[in-house]
Image (cartoon, rainbow, N blue to C red; front, side, top):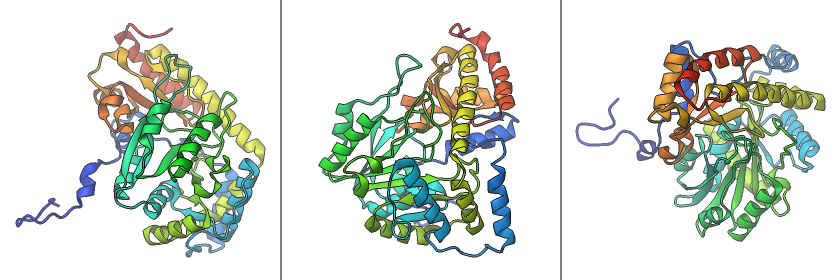
Length: 405
């Protein structure tokens, strides 16, 4: 359909001109088109835990097939509250402070729509998960970006400039969006960094909206600290999480937002009119997921660490400067040694000619030029998938003098 009518009337909203379609999902389509290994989109190519699948099957068979309570089945809200108490020591009221959504993606946009007004500013670290920019635009807010800079040593930490962060906060700041562990960099924010962000939120009467979907995928002794447990932030934090990454069910679309009652009331109203509710039988399966023993989470982190340590040396041998992640399941890389004009051209070459799909780095930045030398790999795949991808990537080695042995 055309954007306008013959008499000049516009048929689409102006806000949709300010962002494009998802590059991540587009690269999955490219992978399917070219029969490439998909290391672009962050979904596992292995099975979810049997306990979850059985619980979902049993819920369907038991006719848990109609609407759950709009803000989430009581059994799941109770389970979320128990889990937050166990992992972060946070006391959460499941009746007034938890809203179950259609994935953490909906929880994020519902939260932003619930708390922002036109002209409010939202602070966002970049590179950022690509939804955050469009989410700010859709909610009428103005994003203010603060750069995370890659380490000089690929084994080091991504870092931000405190002065730049302070300058991003002002009278119009409504919230900061914080993703830890971070997608795409793998950065895990430290307590000192969280306390600095806390101080700025308190100074400017701002909220923190935290995406903690990778909370259990941690390496090298990194600790996940939920912003809501930092002193002074319990009443001004919206904590977003979900089942997708921890339980390898990205297609189930069950997530949640946890917030003080006043904020939850607004989130619940937006959520109700966005989606009504998350899938009822899968919410019941979520109860089983959240009851898994601690050994499950230890094994999850260990298995992902093994995958990370399998892919990193292969990337470096192929000629990438690969930055070691401390959490989540992605590796950001510098592609400067390959001699391509930019990340788009390089990613196109990889998927079409090498047979490996990645995400161009520019999709994670407000200014595409900042990501023009970067691409992201996802390693949430079977070992044999990673090995085959590594084999294909070795075709690049002869093209660059910077390959590491």
